[in-house]
Image 1 (cartoon, helix red, strand yellow):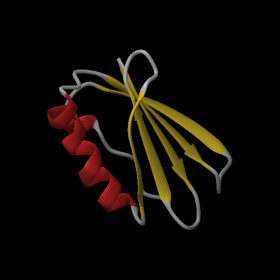
Image 2 (cartoon, helix red, strand yellow):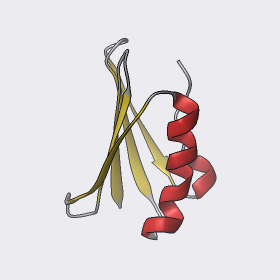
Image 3 (cartoon, helix red, strand yellow):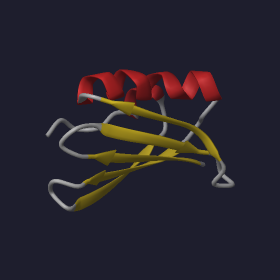
Length: 80
């Protein structure tokens, strides 16, 4: 299972994608939620991901949410 770590802050949203051995595959940053959601939905096809754990850390709310994504339509995060 791949792991997608997302860190939301005031200025940007950072994404790190790891394989099942926790090797970093790619890292990107975005300015808004709709842009990162579009990007997230491209990940399953580009990297042949069947299942992923999305770990979303919202620094403003000091909260962490974890979501299991199993198809490309479940690869998204909620707006603030």
